[in-house]
Amino acid sequence: MKILVSDDVSVKGVELLREHGYEVDVKTNLDETGLIECIGEYDGLVTRSMTHVTAKVIDAAKKLKVVGRAGVGVDSIDLRTATSRGIIVVNAPTANTVAATEHTCAMIMAITRHIPQAYNSLMAGEWHREKFTGIQLKNKTIGIIGVGRIGSRIAKRMQAMEMRTIGYDPYIPEERAKQLGVELVDLDTLLQTSDYITMHTPLTKETRGMIGAEEIAKMKDGVRVINVSRGAVLDIYALAEALKKGHVAGAAIDVFPKEPLTKDINPFIGMDNVVITPHLGASTVEAQIGVSVDVAEGVMAALNGEPVATA
Ligand code: MLT
Image (cartoon, rainbow, N blue to C red; front, side, top):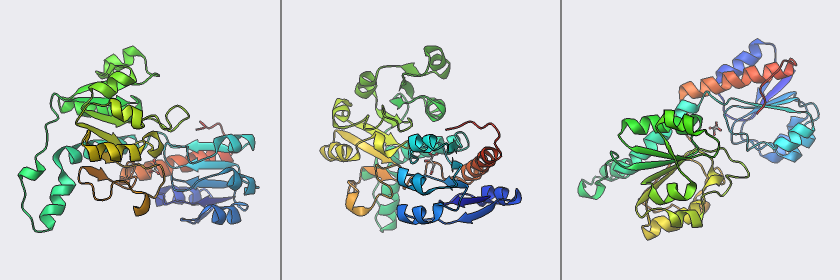
């Protein structure tokens, strides 16, 4: 059977598939047309977030039995069309949890102490100290939207920084929140009382556009906003306006409504109270090996007709 790997995934998963006798082609940077042209010959497809498995791609996929997503988010796959065609969608929901958590923590630190800005300034031959005065995390409140796998780990790490952790999550029981040391609140309370707000939700009908101009307006003056979840959860254009006005003091953003984020659609160009990274949440050596092996195993199980946990 033939498997197409259409995004950069660790070679470990590719090797595993080949060891099990699958013919694997790695073709990255295909656009929709390119994918449509070649997908017909494959039984399996392995992607990361850059490949969009649209209804048109699925229609062209005459032999496709499984789509494997080397990561947690399946918002880049038209699940309804895939399911209606009997195509199994598997993901790798756990292997990059720690990577996303640690990147979020790094982003929080970076905006709090202006690390990239100070680095750039020093590399430009300047020596400024006052300009880069930060604030302390201790005794600040961090509001976590989505207290699941990643959000709960953020809470643990930020508690180590002596922050107060509050959370909005309609799906976790009070008891679990208590165990995590997270005070559950409604969204408005979180928006109005947090010094830092960080998002850790999947992209769903409920979370798309969840934090827009109206929600940003409710945030405390001087709030810092972090998003390492999904770009479409947060309106970055409304955020950029609030940063310009000084209502939001800083933002650290890893994910964007349209990726790659090109200069012409980047609202943060020229702003010095922002740290942005190109969707690096899951980008650690360990996480990438983990997701590629997990997804390879899921794809093989699906192709062998074994029971699999679908995404
Ligand atoms: C995920 O959904 O797990 C990540 O966004 C994966 C990625 O980096 O592509």
